[in-house]
Image 1 (cartoon, one colour):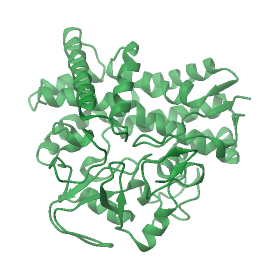
Image 2 (cartoon, helix red, strand yellow):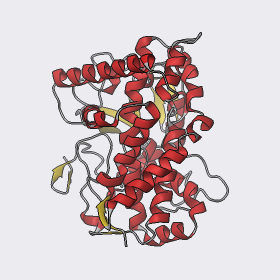
Image 3 (tube, helix red, strand yellow):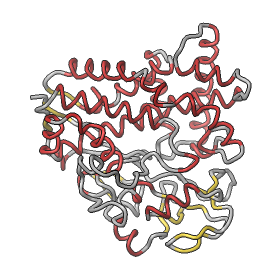
Length: 404
């Protein structure tokens, strides 16, 4: 298996590129082997779809099912994982998914999310003011910012954060945890979500859980299981994935100090810079499996019915037929005429429900960094930064910086 910084990398066919960039093998695959199998952390193999249009096709096709619960199908990780929960939104197919999504869609509109922008900006400023002259971007900023935002948005007590962060890491880990350990963690997390919902019913407010309860108790209602799973999903996905993008984005900007300086001088480029961070760095992993229920025609060839494939958004975001010089990081890429949309949030029916919230948090995180710390620089050679090697999301373990 591939090694990185003296540790074992869980994707033996896809060792990461220099400075945490996507695997250089993606360029070869896109040009020559666009449906070549890849070995996943479980050791199972599945065809990996890498071309932009092919990935979009699989993600939008009614034949691309997220029901992966048959015992003999390839799995992303060994033991119980995210793919095993039939009530989770990401694992549902129409018509159940369509109904579930329709009920929740209005909760995550830009109008609702904008309500929390001032608070996200205030938390970002507070964290940087408290960080001092030298700090770790990961521990002191990237992890606590989305954690505090999601806790306030959901109405979750912050003193429980470390507990549900531990549960989250369990489910996003590629390590071979026992089935019993994962099952126990899942049961504890779900019990916590049910307790939160009960507490909000007793003392209602106007945070996101209250909006979800209104959807549960409305005419076209969520089931109690669906409501509980949605709270679980938001807690889990609402901090770790965003923290990863903040960390990776800060690292990438520090690797390009001229572009960081340009952002400090022109903060109006923040929105464009965030889109380029999402394209170049996102989604931080290699995607979610799909089971093809009928033959699907791709540029790479025909995918036969019954095949489990891995459409890779990170590979699609580096397709040279869509993005000019895709391996180049350029904060101006999305500032001019709009290019094709990146796929960091997916595409089609399973497009990330929390994309508006994540975008807002990323914008406020990088706005705070470049306006409050215009002379930010790394304390160590970026080439020596160690990256995580035991999870489905890839990011620096720590990022030591100097504020001035």
